Amino acid sequence: MFSVLVVEDDFRMRGLIKELLEKQGYSVTASHDGKDAVPLIKERAFDVVLTDLRMPDIDGMDVLSCAKEASPCTPVVMLTGFATVDSAVEAMKRGAYDYIQKPFEPDVLLLTVKRAAEYHRLVDENLKLSAELERCFDYEFVGSGRAVTELKKLVEKVAPLDTTVLIQGETGTGKEMVARLIHRLSPRAEEKFLPINCGAIPDTLIEAELFGYEKGSFTGAAGQKKGLFEAANRGTIFLDEINNASCSLQIKLLRVLQEGSFIRVGGVEPITVDVRVIASCNTDLAKEAEEEKFRKDLFYRLNVVTLSIPALRERKDDIPYLARHFLAKYGKRFSKEINSITPEALAALAEHQWPGNVRELENCIEHAVVIEGGNEITPGSLPREILKKKHYTDPFAHTGVSKLNETEKFLIQRALRVFDGQKAKTAEALGISITTLWRKLKKLNLE
Ligand SMILES: Nc1ncnc2c1ncn2[C@@H]1O[C@H](COP(=O)(O)OP(=O)(O)OP(=O)(O)O)[C@@H](O)[C@H]1O
Ligand SMILES: [Mg+2]
Image (tube, rainbow, N blue to C red; front, side):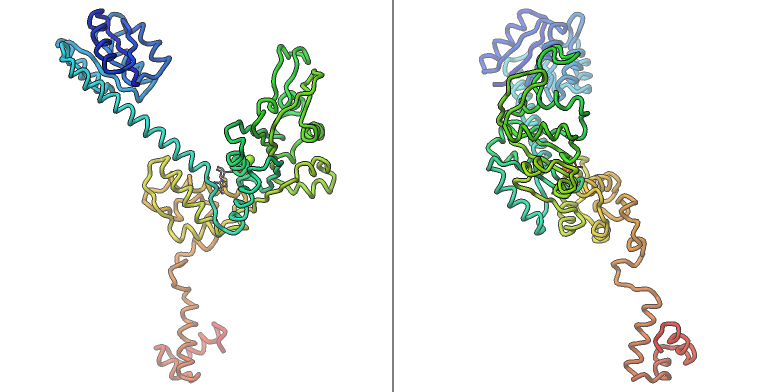
């Protein structure tokens, strides 16, 4: 059912319009002037706003601006008497959807409102689809090389089982993305996924943050507060960068993992929660445990299933796919028709070492999409640091044309072979004197 807000100060006219629209199944909110209508518009998004133009205090123009600001896709139809038609036209210039001149035939009103409501539905649907499409870009774990294919298979296997997972990989390799993927493919998908960066919260706050506190447990604890573990109940908690967890946090985490329960700061009763734990680390945690830099007992608890995401430089076959994926994402976001990446630009991407991994590649393509004026990504639109390799400053790269002395060498060798090493005939065929030939043979190490 479409919702319509009718703003009209004339009591009889307002009643008439409300009745007409309600008969057609619209849900109508009637408002007697602009002052009354503005809070309603700010409070909820109507499918259509129908407003009289001339009203005391806050008039139809003000109602229009307010509606455009609060809900830009809601169409606003102006009702106007003969004397104010010019203002109605002005209102359309400022974004009104249409105007109806009073007195009007009921059918004209109904048709206009119907068209406006339909328009709103389409705009709304379009927005939702675009948002969904954007989200698809954010969900898809791209890559078809052997490493990523194996990884995806493992993710599908562990996701439905309620086991703890440790995701290992350098910065920007997609650890959080994999964690979210596991959550989405698990029976907990409808529940919360709560990421928490173990290194980012100071030690003094982390316990209260994770487990909550009781009233009066420390200065400033005015009331009871639930922690993240309770908030994530029935869902998944993502302990990001667990290698940065302090010693005291490690002990507390170990207890929750072992016992499935914890005690709030200042509390006495243990609280049991049903939470799946996924952790990530950007170092070799096994090695850190071996070197006593990380608690061994916690490592064994976390290391039930370990997924390792290789660095991007170790799986360069994924680069073109990722690059095209990000090109589509940012082309759409910035409304640019860039459809491809030139072989030279792809070669530059393949050559780079990607210390920031996929995140760095994503930023690089975003940069290129912004910079590029044509309809394909060329080396010129890539960030400078990607191009520092000599290869891309070579004007003959990928042209099949080689350097002058290489060309010379090639021609001389060929002529020598044809004339069985006879210098005079070779020099003649090359159009140079025999002394020049000797000089060149010496220079090119062909003697
Ligand atoms: N295989 C992939 N396909 C598509 N996008 C990816 C892929 N891997 C990573 N990304 C994108 O790269 C960016 C970094 O990913 P993410 O945040 O998951 O990495 P991370 O390993 O958690 O990094 P950090 O260690 O720095 O926290 C994100 O924008 C993510 O969407
Ligand atoms: Mg991360």
